[in-house]
Image 1 (cartoon, one colour):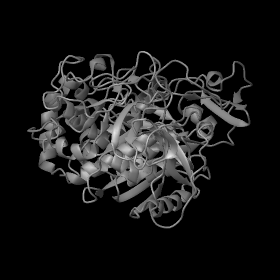
Image 2 (cartoon, rainbow, N blue to C red):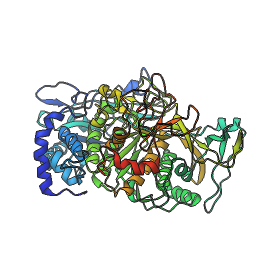
Image 3 (cartoon, helix red, strand yellow):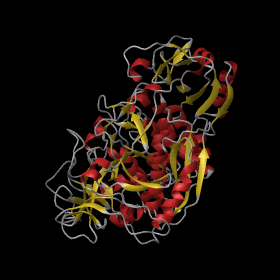
Image 4 (cartoon, rainbow, N blue to C red):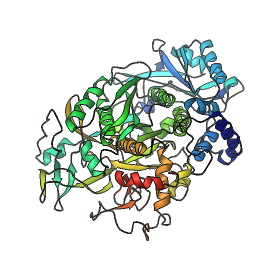
Length: 639
């Protein structure tokens, strides 16, 4: 099913010619041009950067960026988004002639992306303007090249200024990026003009202060084969582990993973990373041996210029160890690593993941305020790439953030501040699965009565909202069709997140992760997102890697199992008349076709959990064994 025959491609084009007008609004709600321009120059989605505001300073000494600092520029080209979005609906509608006709990158490019001739026109323009190292991505959506700032300024009719804050060089285009009128409508955005719009990882260490208050000594590191489970740090009167450390095997047990025959053994996954990742494989092998897990096939794929940065090692270690660990095993684990977390480098990384089409699922445990991605145009390009991935049957999982209602902003001064509450990107893209966070509590094994540092995490007890999880409604993206069928009350206002959720509480259910060979406890939605990817690997393997894009499939579960009127608390689904567990509030949950619907908790007013979909936790967390059966009943699944 991954390969669509040419005859069906022609049929699809004919069908979409009729279907496009009904879906012409697509998913983009913001203006695509930064400015209205003259006949000589055309606007793009790349707006001017307020460099002083991004640097966290009211007054700075500014200067033109020196030509000694060459820039790699990413030029994004327009795709037929309306038609591609319409095609995705056909793909996910059981009974439709195009249902589950997953495209190859070449087929998608032929149907919806710019032609090679159009891409060559942009490449020719860059060459004429003095760019070197010019490259066209295989899907024709990106043309990149390198040039000194002065030539970049001339090519895009902009001005690039620079300053130094705390020893760090910051630069950005202080006027919008334009293109010649001959490229009007073809070029949608120009990335690489600044280094201040960048992603930040959503990872939090376990609080050592909390551990010291409990007088708990660190668990000694043991080498060799699998060891006894990590401890419950706090057990209450009901013998519930309310603060415990977890390894992959413990998460498998808590989330009801089926026997080892139902693993992710036939599904490929990928982690989006940055910097020098040479230590990641070493730490993964240490973790696998320690937890008694198989050694998964592994490849690191470099995107762009190599980097010596290892500041994100704990993040990439967490992503790889929990994703493959909760899956038990996978067919192959790919780690894409790029130069920096700037929007331009991340966009190029996404392009490689999509065009390689090697991994059924990917994970992005990072994000930025969506207004940043909108302002520089990366939202426009990345959405097109994610749309293509979905049409190819790929799913990108993204963490919603660890700052409650607001996506965190990290200024150049190093001081985190929230600013106006807004959702994070790429989680707010309608073509990804946005993963929120919960506090997971389990039944303690071997513990009797209230105690500290005793027993081990056991089976599922319940969950509630983790106070740090992100969630909310996008100001720039429209809700996809699977959110507009009565499941999400906020869909009229825009794309709403989260979609699903899993454990993220760094002080409630942190994971023991091996970093540089040593164990540390970490959490955040950087934990819940790759965990969700590992769960999806199990489900895809169970269904022959034919489920396709995960978001509509998951929402289709609610379409089947949640018949109550939207927002109603007066009824419960007829097939599930009682609560999921005997758990006391706030851990009481409701089963909805393979989901634990989270009922209690808040990540900020007015965000709070409620019966059905909600912003902090979406549809809820996954009961793996139940979901493997009930996912076949999704109204968008067709199995």
